[in-house]
Amino acid sequence: DAGVTQSPTHLIKTRGQQVTLRCSPKSGHDTVSWYQQALGQGPQFIFQYYEEEERQRGNFPDRFSGHQFPNYSSELNVNALLLGDSALYLCASSLGLTSNTEAFFGQGTRLTVV
Amino acid sequence: GDSVTQMEGPVTLSEEAFLTINCTYTATGYPSLFWYVQYPGEGLQLLLKATKADDKGSNKGFEATYRKETTSFHLEKGSVQVSDSAVYFCALRGGSGNTGKLIFGQGTTLQVKP
Image 1 (cartoon, rainbow over the protein chains, first blue to last red):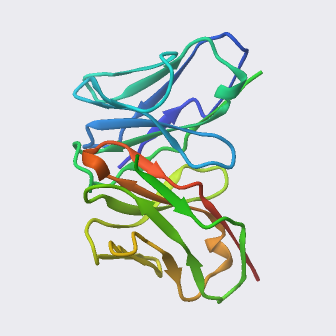
Image 2 (cartoon, rainbow over the protein chains, first blue to last red; image 1 turned 45 degrees about the vertical axis):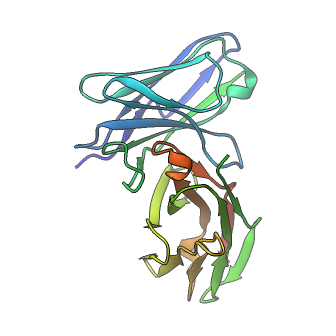
C-alpha cells in the first residue's frame, strides 16, 4: 500500500516564477492538507481540501492556491515566488474531517527560491 | 488561538538514558494530541496520539499522557537508542472547533550518543 507520495522531491526556482507541487494521498484517504516547514521550524498549515473544495486556510497570502481532483490527489501552486518561500512543503492525507483521525505525511518537496 | 509549546533543544543523551520532552498546549474545546517524529531528510511520521483526557498513547517504547488539568502531553522513553536521534514535534488538532489543521510546536532535536 503506497503511502502519501509527493513530486518532485526537490525543486529550484527563480524569484517571481510560479511553481506547482503535487500530492497523491494514501489509498482510502479523501482529505489532503498542505504544510510549509521552514528550516528549523515546525510545519505551518497552508490549507486543506476535502470533496474538491478548500475547507480551511491558514495565514498564507493568495499567492498560495490549490486544487483537489476527483481522485483525491492535490496540487499546491505558488505564484510570484519570494526568497522566503524556500522551505520543505509537506502534504498530509487523512480520512474525513474529524480531529482524531491520523494524518499521514509524504516525504515533502524541498523548494529553493534563488 | 490554539498553540503548542515544546521544550527547546537540542537534547543530548547517552544511550539507555531516560528521555522526557515537555509539551504544553493552549486550546479551547477538546483537541486530540499527537507526537510526530522527523528523521533527517524525511517527512513526518506519527509516533503516538491521544484523543481525550487521561488517554495514554504509546508506541516503540515511547509514551505520553494527555493531561487536561496541566494542558500537557510530555513525551517519555525509558531507554533511548542511537536510532531515536531525530526531531520530535508535538501537535494538536481539533481545538476551538477546528477539525482540520494540525498545529505544531517548534520541534525538539534529540541527539543520542553511543
